[in-house]
Amino acid sequence: MPNAVDSLELLKNRLLEIQHLRDAAALLSWDQETYMPAGGGKARANQIALLQTLAHDKFVSSDIENILTQHIDITTGLTNDTTVGLDSASKAFFRETWRDFSRAKKLPSEFVTRLERECSLAQQVWTEARQENDFGKFLPNLQTIIALKHEEVEYLGYTDSPYNTLLDTYEPGATVAQLTPLFATLRKGLVSLLEKIRASPSPPDDSLLHQTYNTDQQLEFGKLVLTKMGYDFTRGRLDLSAHPFTTSFHPTDVRVTTRVFEKDLQSCLFSCIHEGGHGLYDQGLPPAHHGTPLGESLSLGIHESQSRLWENSVGRSRAFWKHFFPLLRERFPTQLKGMTVDTFYSVINAVKPSLIRVEADEVTYNLHIMLRFEIELDVIEKRVEVRDLPELWRTKMKEYLGVVPETEAEGVLQDVHWSFGAFGYFPTYTLGNLYAAMLYQKAKVDIPSLETNIAQGNLILLKDWLNNRIHSHGRKFTSEELIRQTTGQNLSAEPFLQAIRHKMQEIYGLSRQAS
Ligand code: ZN
Image 1 (cartoon, protein in one colour):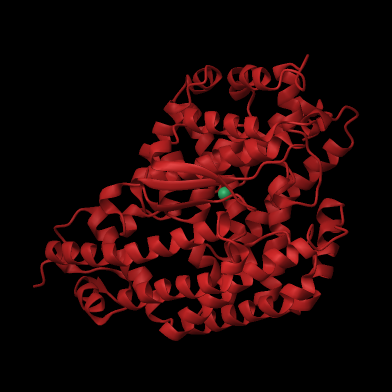
Image 2 (cartoon, helix red, strand yellow; image 1 turned 90 degrees about the vertical axis):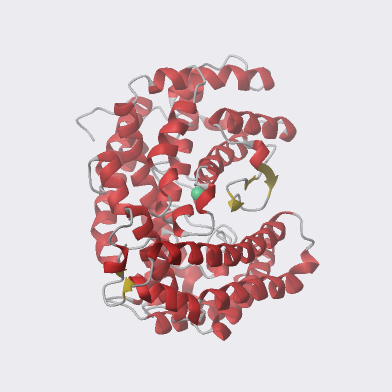
């Protein structure tokens, strides 16, 4: 009988080599987003495509297949009798590697090269098209990407909807059938809350956030908050990019980016906290398992739960600002003169339907996601033409948020995702919000002094709780299992709705009954 422990070691070494190639490609992408001159786009697309193709070919090799099939029952995708003596983590290692392998194996190498190259090129064109506010410029690239996504689904196969296959890339196990009722419940709760907020006679005035704030000082404050969160700058760095993101090449090199505007105090601040949440997850993954599923984040939804938990449950809480507001006021004494913690807390939680998703408040954010989810579903199920997307976008914005973009840069061109082929990605943002509320609710139960500690600037208790409960497990469990074992509950919109209603009732003086 093949020895599963030997196979595990052998596979681990092979996967680590493949990971080095992927890490190098990720570093090139990071550079593309931060420092690369615009002229480098074409050359960079070829470099990234080559590394990704090499990684892909190395991964779908017959010797990896031979090792895996000795220990996996290929009809169920679960481990067979050869792994009986192994612990659950090692079994998960085989199971998850097989999941990745059987998926990758279905994609021809030539297709991977084409997809990588087209995505990298499209990203460059999207950047220019957004700057020039010209959807027509991006349209041919977007059509190519969508055709490639249809091709990908053909290779991978699907159940019920081709969209399920794309969704499964980012959120294993999630389906259209699961998301549709979940999102419907959420939408109903949010639309009703939004109506009450709009009717409120005393909305917070957020104009103070749009005075002039020195950008160097904003960045310095962002770094301070990241440090207090436990983000380790000896294993990370903060740079500027058009679209804030986090990338990781190893738990010892996890990089976050932000953007900073003189007339907007929130953008840099909250993107630092948000990306810091992602960064803590990646820095908290076990280095010994780097390159294997046990050293990887579980899903994008779980990843986003980490960023949203820090950004909203913590970063937009009164407890957090009890400690941090005096520090912020020290840096901006003129702008924040006479301002109290309570007023600042109200102002950063103000709800205002707006055009841009990444700047949306907690109440309207998920409506932006639902719009994208529905459009993607229409595109992938071939109910709409790609050229009609700007108009469809405007129609849905009006229906969901009551605002209509005047430019395409503020509408259909605002997000980078479609340019790199990430269809099925957006729903993970809403899942992240829902998971975050569930996790924070449980963290407060597990650590009764949590908010007292946060109010004293001690954020490490929460970081440690997340390290133990979430980060250290890699992909040992499914999202469903991880959430159930951590919170004792199944995924639901209720904890999120409860938290947001509670906050808004207080800030907008809404009656409890009215919720
Ligand atoms: Zn995020």
